[in-house]
Length: 130
Length: 426
Image (cartoon, rainbow over all chains, first blue to last red; front, side, top):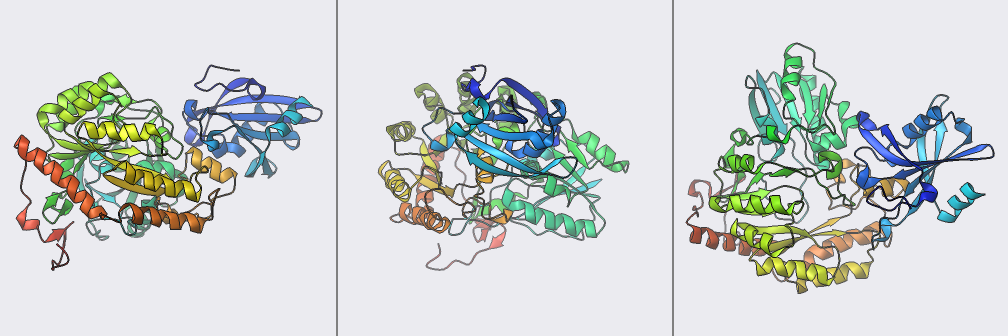
């Protein structure tokens, strides 16, 4: 478990704090884990709501995915992009841990039109631990 | 230079008592203007816009998502007439990309110390498309008394009774509540104003009744206690968002004139029951703010919650439905789950269902929203309950020697318009 934030975040899905400039260039941050599996690169971006001063991953999915593939030299067609909401230690179920796989259109230079599909934790585990 | 600042109207919630309060954002903004700017203000909720205005420059200040489409219309009209239009305010920040399509310029962030540049650019024909100060908070010491002199005070009376004036003692919020965008707008760091600055501003306000609009006063206990101690001599009567649940703080708040607080009631727990009781024990009334339609709410939960509100003797209740305002986790969740069913920003007034609820149909949630209002106010209407609270404050003012009578010259007016009195309409 990583305890550097208010929440304890499962380190299975979180390796580093990633700072980026979000909408309107606002300093923003997320958790980031990148896993290479065969020809696929799985990127898990963790929402850090309480600790993120700017744009959420969800609000910036296409742009953030583009920034990450350029920075880490990932082929766009090999990207599996997952948004992770960490457990918020709340009795409210909508604050539970959730995962979404995000699919994008590729216009030749950038990602567009994100589409989110909720996926189970087991599916993420299978992807990164297979 | 003449600058016309406009506050667009919005559609009020159906069935609710309408009170038009003097807006806060515009008067805070006006205080930050360079001296050479001659500002005139129009609140469209109580006044009429003249599109043939001779103003040099038009500003549109927007607080609510429900204002933005009207704000865009107003801007379009002025721009057709060759006027330059700049937008600001928190809804501009939430809807910046869309608003740019209707603007010559948008201002994002807090105004203190930044407006000289904007107006200088305008005068030199170099107005920038965006003034982006998002997340660059100005020195809190720069926030001086709001410039309430721009308001036409007579427009904020209902049958001779003056509405509360709005006032802020802090900015930012350390909490990160599910449906709220304040952390994005004002920063996640609580920024209390220095107490001497707050006192300086309080001394400028000629209204004895205030609404302290801070997101939550319960963020720094020592500051909160200092604030209330300094407020006591002013003998103001005020409402606010939550106050720290602490006997000493509540006692000081009551001495400082706490009239009623808005308190979120999210479940039927003893925690809530006791929270409300402790306010009441200190003579502070409670208006519950109740959000309906979260993913955990079933129809039975909502009905049980409403019974509970009556049981704990809430003085007033305000019901809203979960609305995914941009830059909230609620928005992210609804977007990702493809549950936003209505994209018309005019319907984002927290009284119309714009999402697919998890445990019921949108129609059922809408029905429960009306059920909540009707059931809570069945025995005593909202107006009657408000009148009771109003009587309480009058009694306190009489005891303090601060009571001022209603203005007889405005007794037949309601927010600038004449009202017809008859036997059934007192």
